Length: 165
Image (tube, rainbow, N blue to C red):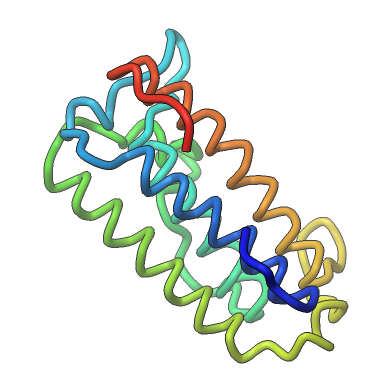
């Protein structure tokens, strides 16, 4: 972590760090490796995590924090709510699309956050489970990324023995 000052800067630093961890865990892997599932019957894979995190970014930033619930959901259907993982197949086009989408969602979220005054961290927005503050969403995202960075570390170790950040 860097020497950040202020709550917003600290939260964004942690979120950025865990996003980078996910990126590094996927470096230098081919489509087959990225789509390799952990253990049956789980559909967990590195590619599935990237797709899932793109979905998470979209759900929390434009749909919730920017209060645009009409924004189409990513990698989800009523018939397959786990599409982020089940659709993570060993295909170069699927890999390219997943990473492009994830990076686009991260950039969109970062742009929204850049315009957010620190004083607005406590602002509440509507959510299906009741009002949620911007701060709570950011902490949740840090937790989400940290948990999945641990998954990614184990998945990567199984593929080629690479461990650590």
